[in-house]
Figure 1 (cartoon, helix red, strand yellow):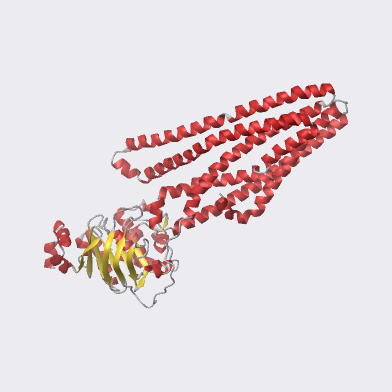
Figure 2: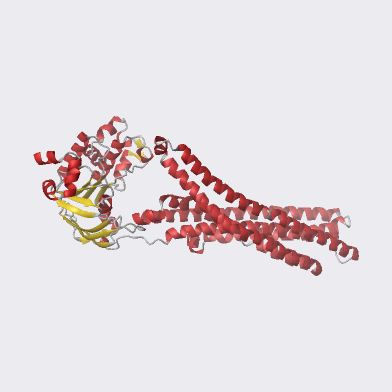
Amino acid sequence: MIKLLPYLRNYWKESIVGPLFKLLEAVFELLVPVIVARMIDVGITEGNTIFVWKTCAILVAFGGLGLICSISAQFFAAKAATGFGRELRTAMFSQIENLSYSQIDQVGNDTLIVRLTSDINQVQTGVNLVLRLFLRSPFIVVGALVMSFQIDGKMGLIFLLTVPILTVVIFGIIRITIPLYKKVQNSLEQVLCATRENLTGIRVVRAFGTQEKERVEFREKSERLEQLQQRSGKISACMNPLTYVIVNGGIIFVIWFGGKQVYAGRLTQGEVIALVNYMTQILLALVALANLIVSYTKAVASAGRIQEVFELVIEKCEGNYEPDPAKEAWSVQFEQVGFSYDGSKASTLSNLSAQINAGEMIGVIGSTGAGKSSLIHLIPALYLVNRGTVFVDGVDVRLWNQNTLREQIGIVPQKVVLFRGSVRDNIKMGRAQIDDDTIIQALKSAKAWEFVEKSGKGLDWILQEGGKNLSGGQRQRLTIARAFAGHPKILILDDSTSALDFATERNIRMELQKRKGTCTIFLVSQRAASVMHADKIMVLENGELAGYGTHEKLLQECRVYQEICASQSLEKEGKEK
C-alpha cells in the first residue's frame, strides 16, 4: 500500500486538510459531554433556566460546527481518494498497454481486468476511510480516556480496563476475518472471470449447447463466494453484540460506582452522565476503527495485487536505431532463432534460420501448431527470442526503438480486432495524419469499400464492439485495409483471408503482388493456394524450418510441403502452372 502513495502526490493538500477537519470535529464531540454535565449540574439542578438555554445554544453551535467539519472532511477525503483512484487507474492502464505479449499471457486478461476495476475500487475505498477515520478514532479513544481521568481518577480506571477488553475482542475478530476476506477477493475474481468468459463466448456456448454445464459451474463458483462471505459475515456479526455487551457492562459499573460517588458527594450527576457519554464514544470510535482496519486490510490485499502488475519489468527494445527513411522496404533475417512461451517446457521454434530480402513476398505455411504465428510475432518484437537473433533492416530488433519499429510494420492478426467507433477511426488507428482519400484507397485495395459505401454513412459508419455488426469476411477486409493504409515497410498477414471467398482472396493476392518491392510481405496461411505464388515459401514443422524456397523447388525437395499440397490437391495444379 505504501508503494502506491506516490499517486496521492497531486492531492497532498486534501490528504492533510481532510483529517484535520475530522480532528476538529472530534474535539467538538469530546467537549459535548462536559457541557452537558455543566448544564445538568448548574442549570437543571439549580433551576437556572437562562444557563440551560445558553448551554443548549452552545451545543447547537457545536453541533453545527461539527457538521461543517464533518462535511468538509468528507469532501476533501473523497476528492483525494477519487483523484488517487483516477491516477492509479490511468497509470495501471498505461502499464498494461506497455506489457509484452508474454507478460500478458503470464498474468492473464481476466485477472488484469479485475485488478484494473475491482481491486483499484477497493484501494480507493480504503484510502477514503483512512483519511476520514485513521486519526479521528484513536483521538476519540485517547481523548475520552483522558477526559474520564480529568473528571475522576477512580472512575477513569473503569475506562482503562474496558478499553483493552474491547480492543482484544475487536482485533481478535479482525484477525480471524482477514484471511477470509482475502479468500473472498480471490473467489470474487473467479466469478468475475467466469462471467466475462461466458459473455465473450456466449455464441460458442449456445452453438454447442453447453448452457447447463456453464450454469452449473457458475453456480458452484457463486456458492463458494457466498459461503466465504457468509462465514466472514457471521464472524464479523459477532463484533457489535460483544462490544455492546462490554460497553454496557462498563456503563453499568460507571452508573453503579458513580452513583455511590454522587451519594458520597465526590461526583455530581452531570459528571456521571458525562462518563457514560465518554464510554459510548469509545465504543463507537473502536467499532469505526475496526471497520476501517477491515477495509484497509482488503485494500492492502488489493494493493499487493496491483503492485504485482507495476513490478513487471517492461520488455521493450531499448535501442535508438533510426532506419534510412528513403528505403521502401526492409529486409528480415532469422539467425538460429529459438523461442518458447513462458511456463512451457517445449520449444515453439528451434534453430530457425532464413534470409528474406527487402521487397520480397514470403509465404509461411505449416500445420496447426507449427509455429507460424509465433515466428511472425518475433519480427515486431511482440515476443523476444530466447536464443538467436532476429534482424530487421540488418539490425537486431532488440536494438531498435520499439515505437519506430512497429510504426513501419503493418500487422493483420489471426484474430480480428476492431473497436467500437467509426470506420475512419478504426482504419487510422494511431496514424492521425492519414486523410480520407488514403483510407478510401486502402478500403478499395482490401475490397472493403463496396460494403462500407453501401452502409450509406461511408467512413462515418459506426462499428459495434469487435465489429459485431459485420460478417467474418468483412471484418477481415477492414483489418487488411487498416494495414494497407499505413504504407508499411513490412506487411504481415497472419491467416487473414481464411473467412474470404476464393474470388476476393485472389483479388487481394493480386493487390499484394502490386505492393511487392515497396514493402516486404509475409503471408501466413494453411492453404497452399494462398502462398504458392510468393517469391519464397517457409515451411514449418514442429517449430523447425522444414523447407525454404519457391513453390516448384519445394514440390521437388520438401516432403512436408509435398504432403500439404497433396492433401489439398494442389500438386498437379502447381506443376501445370
